[in-house]
Length: 119
Figure 1: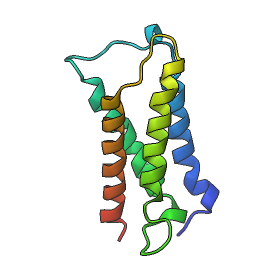
Figure 2 (figure 1 turned 180 degrees about the vertical axis):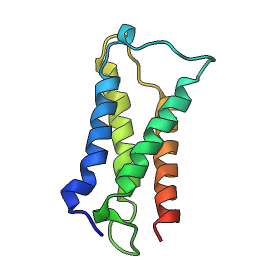
Figure 3 (figure 1 turned 90 degrees about the horizontal axis):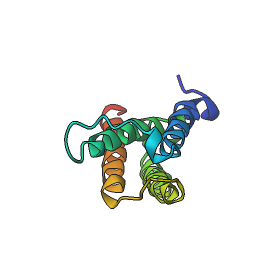
Figure 4 (figure 1 turned 90 degrees about the vertical axis):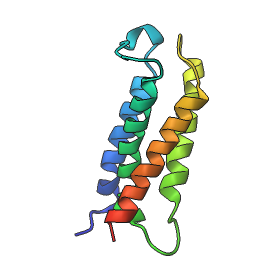
């Protein structure tokens, strides 16, 4: 059963909002829980894996041979880029290419999971 388009976007909107909220916190408000250097890249990857899964799984963009087949990838990576850039405006936060790379890899894997199992 297909959900109405708006309802199918609800998880993506909520998860995207959570991402923006978390990345809008000034540096000192973010807990330092990393056990080893660059462990935050794993967190970036996992957060965006879930986001990629949500946006790729919307009923409007179920993978089809035509149309917006790659929309989730374009939307997800654009969101990740804008999210990294917006952190330049947040006190004690930074924009890092490796964070964007981890975000994009998560988006791609989330998309591929939907592609593989939605057929």
